[in-house]
Length: 101
Image (cartoon, rainbow, N blue to C red; front, top):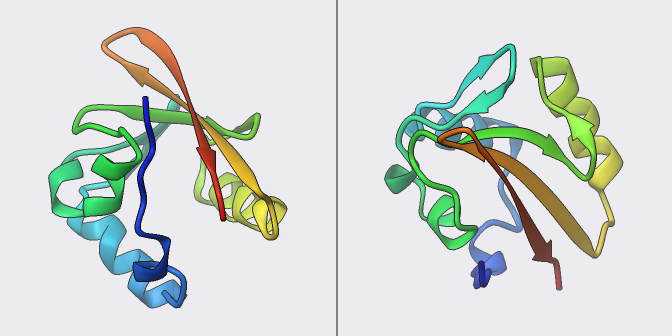
């Protein structure tokens, strides 16, 4: 999928802002990854090609099975010029490459 993200809208978000977006999106941690309940509530998810019902299973190869996994992945990605999100959509694994300016 083509990724077209307005990064400036998200550059200055703090942890509280991000948690608010996660709540709006209905994000829940499940054993197999991070489930997205309402992707339409957070525009960046649609811009990234993520849909309601998707389960994000890994980011740059880091499996996401707990809140600690998410925090570790975020730390490892700081300063990265690209991210690869792997999702499970209806039983199909999809990789979404995301260049970061």
